[in-house]
Length: 515
Image (cartoon, rainbow, N blue to C red; front, side, top):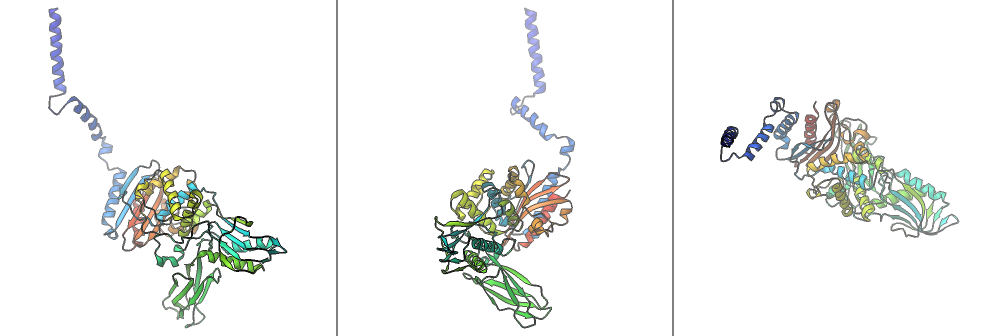
């Protein structure tokens, strides 16, 4: 028994000595802390090929930080940059990524995504021709209505087709009025922050549920004005409008001058009217100057084109041209469906069409909320962005096009949107609508067709541009053969010249895309 006790005592002494050797006593060195430090040491002591080398991400961050710091055009300006992995959504780089900034037309990324999600790729806009009475002996005993439901793609040929179909119904005379119904949307024509001087141009055209376009770009609510030199020096230039319409009154005060002199033609529209003025000079050897001018109250513009089409079919009427609401009892004579939203997305996004954006806002409001207004449409965009995982508490939306100087979005939210949309079944349509850098075809390259030509030799850039006063933006995808797809968002604010922003964006994309 004695021997056993002695052995136990010896073992205890040996154990104590052994523990002291491993864990020397220190007031702050508890076994728990020692275990933690050993775990942390595994992180700090990286293998040589990780700890001793600069990673590609580190190098990228260093390059971007250096460029942003030293770019002179950013002195006094603000830039926000957000870069993510398209595969994981992980942030690779950010500079002011959470700072709310004006997006300009990058706002269309939100509008387009919300429209595809809430309305669907196959959504169309309807236009109806309705009879307010019976047809007796080739005479409509009542009013004839043209009812618009938002289609921004109606052109002259559509109105001619409507008139032909009315004639085919046996109508040669209308014993009543011709009435335009635009009540599908509200009667608020411009978004809250549109600068009044921009209202005269196509990009600031008024929004109506019944409107018309002069061309296949579908610049709804505008007319194209062509100014060509006169046949001799000193005479007025030759001016024409497309489509031809009495709805606008063109006053030509310009002059044809000698070859080699300055071309200085200014086309404007008197606010609150449809009086379009031509001022300035055009050399006799000059090319035709083209401008697209918004009309005042586009409902009347569409009605005028319909009137012309009816007259060309020999259809007469006893009443007047009016704006009103078709009664529920009216009979549908003609029903026209627009191209689907999937197809409309091309001119909308590629050419950055502001009117399409605002029409989509009102259409979302009407279809989802029962009210075709900016307020209800923007509510739908908020809801759709929430479904996509965006933090809408950090976003302020005022319109659908981005022409507002009040809308605010952090770059990180735009890049997150571009990551999340990849998971949706309509993503291929969304992606296809983005301008492709250096692609010459307007319906491929869009607003990027003349940019980043050198970069396009080793990378494909698909991105949405944006420009308003003092703001330039670019957000999209960079695809290279050597690395994974990168998502980026660049918002330049408070620039002295917004055109400088294009060079800044292109340089940042170059840094991101370089092998």
